Length: 287
Image (cartoon, rainbow, N blue to C red; front, top):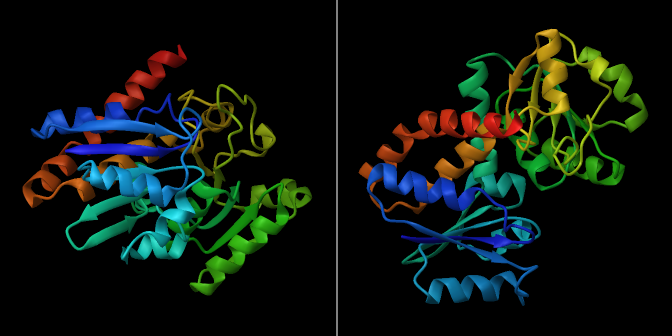
């Protein structure tokens, strides 16, 4: 099964390891190639997809800056991809291209795997870019009573709030100066910015705002313990690691790529073991 990832600055991606590893675990010989626009210019996503389809690929994952374009290439679009307005997975079927957004489904699965049936409550989400959009729709779909959106680009936050509202979810954009007042009144705090990554160290909000009653999610997973996560652990707040999003979005994508129901079921059975593996490996790197 030939798979790949199309995007920019992706040479350090862990996706090849995840998909090849998962294939070995369930008896599927999978390859996973990286098509990095920084290394070899990509004329257009459409052209790149046409090339990989002609080369016999079963499907590709798509990342920055092509996710929104990916939806337009598909004849069939999943409910999640339609809501979010972007796709990170394209599956090549005999009757055309199918677009999926497994960031959307993967976030929800990671939430449930960590917090079970806990209600999200009122949620503050920082960073409304590609992953932020998928996570915002995911937490709204899980039943958040309100989603407050914060972004340095306030217009982008307002646009996402309007998109959430169109689907019947309660959401509003919050000016950055109101973050300090609103964070303590929220149940969940979400970081979907690069702040906290090993290349962008720091905390997306003042650490003292994180309190014991919060649950937090950090989309950053390198390092596995970010400053945001460390602040949450220090006060006893519940933590959803970004490792969960990486693993569950990958497993969901792999299941879409599989053509056999028994292989899909086998891949699903490996999800928690993969989550434990990558969390362990990333924590090792953090030591």
